[in-house]
Length: 165
Image 1: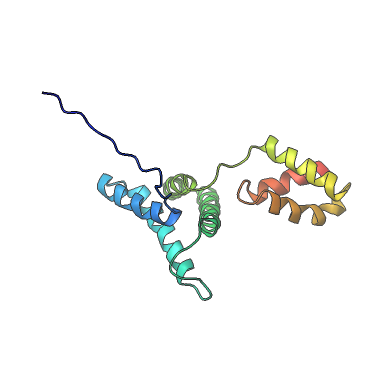
Image 2 (image 1 turned 45 degrees about the horizontal axis):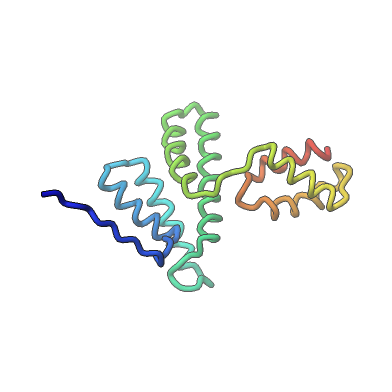
């Protein structure tokens, strides 16, 4: 006698929000005894809870767009900490931060390559009519808006300086 496994799919399944995904991943990390992931996920959850309960927040949920901005901020903090730890020859602390950064980056949108960023920047420079370093202040806000969440501000700034500098 054979037993067949029947899989029932629901076409109306709802997509998990980032907040729900973090909560589910915390449970998974606990079961796997993955300390690095657990540290990072708890930091993400904490930041989301702070944002949800902050003055002026709407309810106990944070939108995915807000969550991505929060995660980007946390990733930036980790990168800065890594740099500081490495400058002070504290490789063990830098390694911990790097582990957490790797987990946080899983929840961020894929970052654009420098070539892709350069293409977008050239288009923005053309649209704004920028032709010298004096126009940096005119181009940078447009670039940050166009590349929000897709590229790091330092990379955008550096490439923009090269293009119009």
